[in-house]
Amino acid sequence: MERKTFITLILSAVFSSSACVPRQYHFVNKKLTWTEAQRNCREDYTDLATINNKNDIEELLKSVNDDQIQHVWIGLQKTVSYKWKWSLGDPAFYTGNNSQYRNWVQGKPNGDGDCSNMNPGEWNDNTCANILPFICYSDSSKGYIPVHQNMTWRDAQNYCRKYHTDLVSVRNQTENQQIEKIRNDAHITDGVWIGLFRDSWEWSDQSDSSFRNWMTNKPDNYGGNENCAVVGVKSDHGQWDDWECDIKTQFVCHEDKLVLVKQNLSWNEALKYCRENHVDLVSVHSEQIQRRVMNVARKAFTAEVWLGLRHSCTLGIWFWVNGEILCYQNWAAGHGTGVENCSDAVRVGAVQSGGDQRWVSLPQTDKLNFICTSYGE
Ligand SMILES: *[C@@H]1O[C@H](CO)[C@@H](O)[C@H](O)[C@H]1NC(C)=O
Ligand SMILES: *[C@@H]1O[C@H](CO)[C@@H](O)[C@H](O)[C@H]1NC(C)=O
Ligand SMILES: *[C@@H]1O[C@H](CO)[C@@H](O)[C@H](O)[C@H]1NC(C)=O
Ligand SMILES: *[C@@H]1O[C@H](CO)[C@@H](O)[C@H](O)[C@H]1NC(C)=O
Image (tube, rainbow, N blue to C red; front, side, top):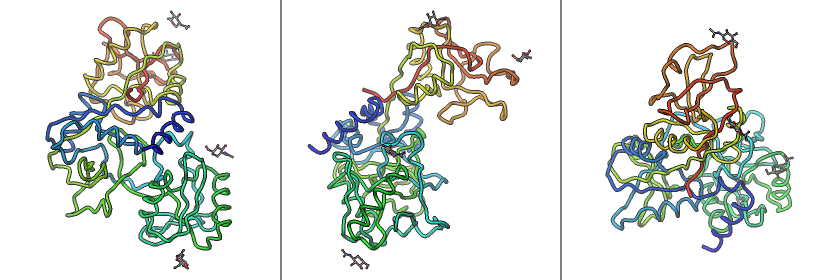
């Protein structure tokens, strides 16, 4: 408990404050399939719950205020993409794209396994069930801890999470050299597990979080059709299981807050501002969110307020910056539905701050107030 509080303090001190504010979770005491639950969350809140770290798990468990509940859906679902990611999966730990730093041996990864080891300094993909020594990372000391015991990747992960923070992440060449030196100084002659693993699970809200907290021997895809994730609330202490998506169970949504920024910036500057200081420019994928956006936009100093809405001349479509295409639409007459002028600056979308508050198409160079999404208080 004490260690967790400490890590939370460190995280909030080191990283931009908003990225570390715990999410606001909402437990919904209705039994629905995963897809129905997703729709329900997107209508009433932001999306099915995303989990970034152990602290989020505690918050999520606290939100489930009914002793009878055993399992709740969260936003994690199996997809066709099959990507490498770090065990220390909190997006707040990374800046720019340094979560994408790799130092594979030439010709690797070559399908040898879904976990990775370092030896010496360069990385190999390897079968997760192999046993190797490993290196943990401690957030409190910002240090690397070599562990001279042979374990499977998952056991090593559990060990690091229990005694330190997680298996080590490597964000650039400098860190890679530091970790290699630790391996060498500890006289470990074999490869060591690092935190890089591969899976095909993704969050419903497109979040980058690679944090996973599966029960032992899960996900096992029992029966071949277990593509959605539940959190075991009661006896499982917040560990996760894979289930068939059409089972009906209760679920937890999360709600991102909307923040009106009263600065006059171009759309590109506004996007950068939101991503650096909050989460993103707001995407309005339902009438419920439009209503919340209207409330916030009314307080703006400019006649229109940027949304995370952008036109692609190449594809001839409008899309949300979170990657979704437009289903719900609320364009003003003469906007958004015709052909855009592609010889002009890139066209982007804003919501009117007054009147009936519909969406308009504007050149990205206009300077407007804007609305960011942020995690809940
Ligand atoms: C780990 O396994 C390797 C290879 O089997 C062995 O050489 C080494 O002594 C083991 N290390 C420990 C600490 O058990
Ligand atoms: C490597 O990453 C760490 C953590 O982000 C950072 O403090 C350090 O300055 C980086 N070093 C280089 C050379 O990029
Ligand atoms: C932003 O633009 C609005 C409308 O043009 C203007 O009234 C306001 O003073 C501007 N604010 C700043 C800080 O420049
Ligand atoms: C498109 O934008 C360009 C550049 O601003 C302008 O010269 C042109 O007249 C516009 N075309 C139409 C059809 O509005």
